[in-house]
Image 1: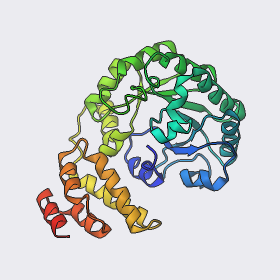
Image 2 (image 1 turned 60 degrees about the horizontal axis):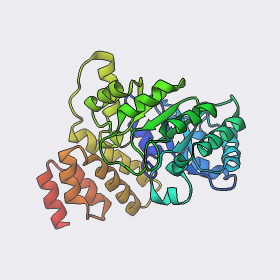
Image 3 (image 1 turned 45 degrees about the vertical axis):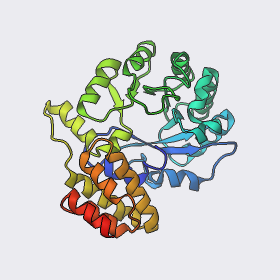
Image 4 (image 1 turned 30 degrees about the vertical axis):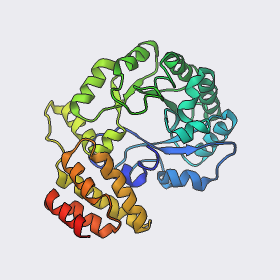
Length: 322
């Protein structure tokens, strides 16, 4: 979720009850200890006193991505000094650029490297803060999936998130939730299911097939910003809330733009807004119509007018005359 789940987005997504914790975009660790400003850029919640959390009080875990155990350990200590209360190690990123530079899912080709990375961070911070990890079901195939999962546990991880695809499968459906269940059965630490959870039905299927108590939302939380809240309501009452209407989605996007606009140039905010709308269109017809109508608009105010217009038809007309 690099470039997507920044502090503003975390704030907006966690306002209604639903999320138990959130994870930052990854801090890229190469071969040196990074200065505090890098950590504060990725996790401005570190500036707050006490537990780093969103304004609504949802705890924020700092995510590290790297392959060099010594560098990871040094940066884990830096994060601890700055106030991090949890560290998550990313072995799931499938991006070619990240993998080409020996990060993310590239380590899944050798469980020993996964173990070394987790162990270095765990030894660096000791029992002061928990270390967690996220993996996929292997790199090119699933043969090493269980070995990599066990490696995280044996090295000291206290929780493991498993995305139900290999790196080579990318985001192509389906997510193999039943394979997550095979891993869960062999581990003693909590295992969290992740991948292709777009709806209440997906949530229930992921839990049923994996046997996991908890799930992690990624792209699904952007596609429907109230999905976590609707899941939580369903858990508590058994009542199914209606799908998140466009008016609510548009309001969230407008507030996102207003908050980002206070610190970023309009052209950057326009790009970020389209990026979020692109995620929304995957599962919402209204968002898809508006994305098609607005995707070439470069003026932020015109884009916001199009998002707020009464109908997709009006939006299209606005786009054509802009």
